[in-house]
Amino acid sequence: MVQRLAETLRQTIAMTRIFYKNFDWTKNPKQKMMYDLCSNPPSNRVQHIMLRGSVGSGKSIAAHAWTLKTLDEYPGAHWLGLRNTHDEIITSIWTQIRKFLKRHQVPCTHGKQPAYIELPNGSAWQFWSANAIVQTSLTDVAKGLGSTEFSGATLEEADSIMQAAVETVPQRLREASGVKSRFMFYPINPPPENHWLVRFFRENKQDNPLDFHEIHMTMEDNRYWLEKEAPGYIETQYAIYGHRPALFRRMILGEYGPEAKGDPIYKDVFSRDFHVYKRTVDGQPRPSIIERWTAEQMWKLGPVCLCWDFGWNHPCLLVFQDRDYGRFDQIVILGAWLGDRELLRLFANYTLGRVKSMLPNAEFLSFCDPAGAQKANGGVSDQTAIDILEAMGIHPRHTRSSVEYGINLTADLLASNYNYGRSGVQPLILVDDNDFTQDVIDGFELGYVQDPRALLEDQVRPLKDGKYEHIFDALRYGVIHRRKARKEDYTMRAVRTQRSDVFSKLHTDPETGRFYVEDPRSEVDFGELMEGTGIPSPSYSF
Image (cartoon, rainbow, N blue to C red; front, side, top):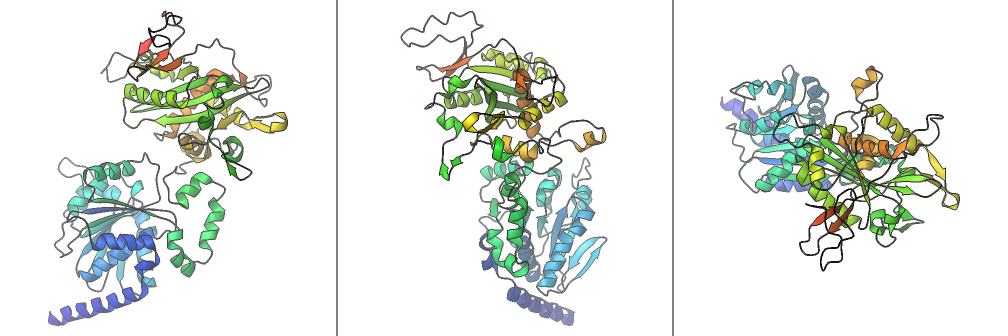
């Protein structure tokens, strides 16, 4: 027994010397930031650390390095490595750790069934698939883990792991190993901001700011190691993603952004260079369209269309101006807002207030999802979504049409252009570049994709992703009302539909500060002014 303990101590000391000789935390500032946080955790509770970063940013290596440090210092300790499936474990985190140990000359033994990597001092990584963990029963949502206990955990590509599995792990970090501080690492390529994991961190950080931490990592942070191990890697990645800004932000800069979940529907007809309003001209910055709205009296160019989609707990409003230049018409998308577990009434009140402040003096038309005329299945309220909007003075039009028709009509507009003399070629759909249009731009480029199952059926059907489907459904409802395809020659640009338009205007009551809607269909005499204010009396009050 004494000889075994002595051998374990000798191997641990040798392993420690090897590791610290080969790994330097200071070469990557974000790895050093994580090291400092883990060395002095702000509380004695489990520390949740999201390592959000681009490809090659060193996020996984940081997690593996701290884990090795812990397993090295506490013989016999166990660390959980988690991914969705066993195959993903073997091809990713299991292989990554083996390569990491080999690079730093740390000996180990390993196996695949079950998956583990053991160090000479008896400490080990043990790997589980999230699918095996979430074998739900009435007594234990983590039945798959049995009675296992760990001293820490790494949830590789945590955004792809089921929430039930993630929420189960902290209760398993109770191993009596002597490890004082317990950590859960979440190395991720940034998902969309509406992803459950992002909400999970943000909501928990509000209640427990000492326990939830987010470290943003980029390739540039990891330049030292990348240049040492893969010269030219950063420049190669810039070349791959440089022409695709949505992916560039996510995969290079490590910012939240859309995931490539399928084949983008508008990839062959949308161009950022052509369809997005340019914020720089000849190297000089210029304001966005909404920033120019008042000074240049842009409300005179055409009505503003409010396009509504009534997703379950995710209502959406997309706003565009339908501009009439005489020789051609142009849809100018000014913004889109998506509710997150919000009631339509509150969402509409907030977004309409913002639109009013952004676009003073505009005349509004409203269009919506025809399903808004149906009552909710839950039977909680007798009101439909359209009833709610109409009670607020918004009277949206709706009509039934196939999804494919609306998508093709929008694609036709994107693919068409108009040669506007000296002003050059103009797109028939233009997207303003402002804080409220980035999701629209990302959706056109990457996020709004075809459902892979629909491809097998030879159909056009967008993937239900909970975000872009709502934004582009809202756009579609506006487009099918304001444009129609030329049936004589489908290759020609779509033309304005001939409909009698009913306009609304938003006003602010100077006494209460609240806004109200002016609706010409109301029986209120708008020639009669509110006493002492000089503005029309309201038809509906919010």
